[in-house]
Picture 1 (cartoon, rainbow over the protein chains, first blue to last red):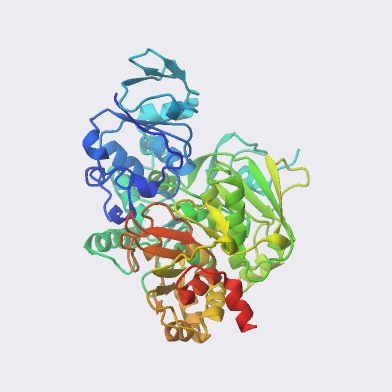
Picture 2: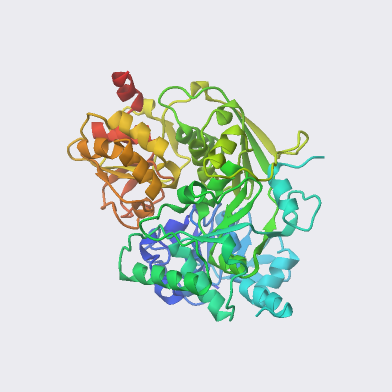
Length: 165
Length: 425
């Protein structure tokens, strides 16, 4: 996975997907405008399976889940940040999208580095140097949600058990 | 060890006698608020999972506000889809154009918000309703879909920060300046994942609208919620809406707070958040250079209440908006619009050369009805000044109180509202 590093703090949802595109909600439509107001070249730079590394409070601002969908649509498979804003973090988990909190990471990794995420050992691995950066493992219920493919799959299961869907 | 208001509400709504910060719980929901932008995807998710029915149509309120009146064909289609879905599901509380308003002004105004409730809304400023001693928080579309289907959601119980606020607000200083001061002090992630509880004589002396302004911007400090205990002021607001019965809830004397902040309002001044963060705050009086403004925007869920419009009108009365500056006034709800009309405020605005709009979130989020061009600058009573928030990524937004925005509209550059208020008295 190639890392696209934006070491700034407080990258907000208006920058990740500007409100002028919120009259759309399909992932492929939003993807074309991901990160447009912070880096107009972002979409061209990203290949399927890449990740973003960022500073503190990533995803602050609006509750628009369109921010997660725009990044996923653009090919991003994970965001690793020093810290996350609350609603964005929830939106990631609910979508089964990897949001990994790793304090200090934004200053450790160079842009365009090749990175691997080891979920079992809860480490970010910089492949060229072999350096490992541990992160706090997900709580069990978050792991379950991510492996189930998100909250709605869980809800569907719950309702089916009650005979409601 | 006691519990805070937030902990008590979450305990009552989950299967726990007592909850403490960090616990993961499932909480039942009393009220679910939907608007146009985030609800359409939730409807698609429900359909995709084959979920035909919402858990309880009486607990769901739909208030399209972001792109109303319909801004373009795509937004018209979105709102139409929600309208049809609401009908299919028997949801009567759909606030159509003509009864519409910015959801966070409309929801309490229409008497939906009661102390002790758990409320979720698919909008980050849902923290506003904590002003009524409710646990109220913003969620995304997947959470909304899950909430609509099941009537419950998972939460991590937040720790609470206590803000003890004392003193009278000086002339020209309002609830907006107070919350900007708090965000300046703690930063845009200073309350990350936490509940902000506001208390003290300053808060007690505030009306409900000012308390809503305070809680509204809790999210701008990263908070999960803002909350204020209910009192006689709350009771009066609810009585005016025919509501007498609701649960009383307040923090225990031995409740545990992660941190307590003491704030004395005596030395507060009119404040301004410079681009591009709400924490980038300086007193207006310290600005030495003239900062010309292309637009002054008075409205939004933060400052579009009738009390805000009265303050702006007090300053704009008999004056003219400066040549080269546009002034837009957006009452936050239809009822506020009508009340402003009855009081003659709309005449004052239009005589001054301001344009009065129908209620909408509109330009606050760069949607429509007042978008900024590259190189333009806006002084705004809204809540965010991120890059591109109100239009071009090369425009600038300065956050301020309605008084500062109105005074700046007259001057054509950002100015201290106290100069205008002194002139009047």
